[in-house]
Image 1 (cartoon, rainbow, N blue to C red):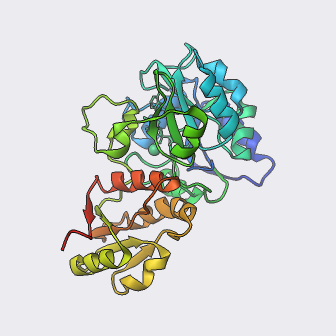
Image 2: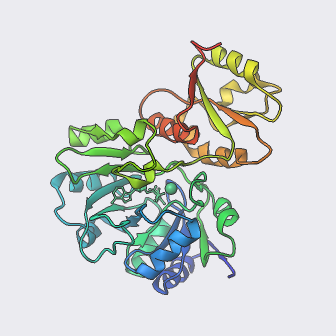
Length: 344
Ligand code: TXA
Ligand code: MG
């Protein structure tokens, strides 16, 4: 198969991509978070192709991408008032809501669940494609399952060239980590995955929020979890990743003492001078956390190289978007964190 490379700047692109979707094909789409691998979310055969292309476990449900909040009621039931308030405030944007699914949403899309995840991406070309296709787009992150997510069209090309119908190039993703997921199907709203919409922002609208344990701790593969995707090893380069916590100086001291040839250091730009000779790779500025989220997956992809021995990673502290970065890095590290303030 020849994969079409379409530019978001080309006025023909929405119509070309929408036609491929209507025909049951696969189109990689840009969003503000990460690139998605999109197909008609109401067409079981098209959705099956997504699972096959990604090598994704069948029980891992997909997010339906909508072009506007008006569409929410077409695919969700029993929508609480809080869902409308969140959509009003954060859509289009990096927030996914889990709600009871209507019967028109295939179980293949929901991974067999009776609920469905929906979001409205903040990306004009992608919303235009959805509107022209006239169907919601089921789209997981476009990476091969288990690998770091795709934040440029080149990442998608690397993973899927010749195996999907088209890629829409909208440039690098602004947020860089996947959307925040909130489950609204229980008594209390539950954070299933942190992202660009922060827990603080959610609390302001909801007044209450439970953080699911899958966000902060390793989950057993056989466990029953709210967001099935959270139990799989994720976002990870093929080598071991160790997060080194603590002050800049203590961490550098620890890493320099444990560093072996072939290892790499994933750090903040401000720390580069501390790691001369340790093959450092900066993923953004600590003082500007959004540069870290935007750069994280591209850096993890560079480190996904058989020549790399071990990665020592520095992680921002605190809430806001840093909370989402902590979640992704901890998952990449299989929750291996050492505290340089205590370790020798
Ligand atoms: O930012 C994003 O959300 C990106 C872009 C492409 O929109 N998409 C994305 O999709 O990250 P994916 O498939 O990589 O992650 C979706 C997550 C998975 O952890 C999945 O288990 C969870 O959402 N999920 C989907 N439907 C769900 C449901 N009905 N209940 C609970 N979790 C659900
Ligand atoms: Mg993913």
